[in-house]
Length: 272
Image 1 (cartoon, rainbow, N blue to C red):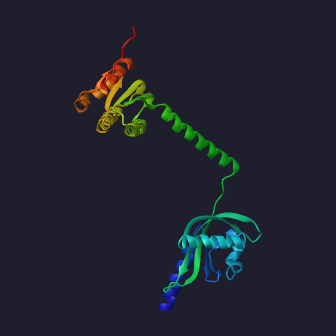
Image 2: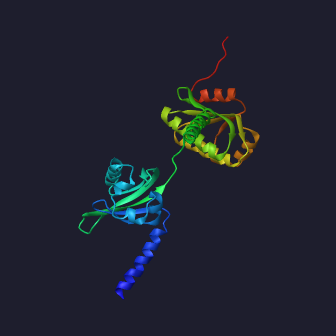
Image 3: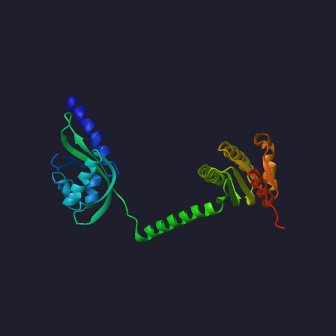
């Protein structure tokens, strides 16, 4: 009865391994293939009898590739995932594969072999590599454009200015806030002047983000002054005025700049 049960379980295991979409090979301590599933036969263009009992080197590009794979598995602590290599078919064709494999040990810690899953993949063609490089280039430019669309700089010792240009939504404002706070912290700004004259805002949630940014700037020890707030943003800010306290907001940049300099103890005078 025990023998029948064991055989029954073995049948289930064999069916499971043969149903796997990846090629599976198992070897002993000498590197001799002891198990191969049907996908392994398809991948290597060999029948089962041509795999079982052969060296694992036969399915690698060459001896050096087999040794390199074993070295990488060893350096990874005995288990590796998605290692890129090539499998050599019976006809000599090299098939790119990703291998996930593990060394196997007995209860005493002695190496007894290994098992590996071989999955075919298609390496990127030259045109695809060029497309990816172009995408990376455009993403880098986009990051640069984002910075240019909300530049922050120190106009005078203690006075920093941020000019926000273009459409402003919650996600973009979060990026702008991070950039602003990092700048304030790095140069120890005492006054921050936000120029919103070229900003387009159609999301009331931006007002909440602006309130939060102003409070955070204050926690860093700087005063925040706003120039040229648009009517729709002003309406969205109105319910938050109690949170902002004595917020200084001006209709144009010239007056706002004058107020910012005055906060630092300077004033603008006309020459006679």
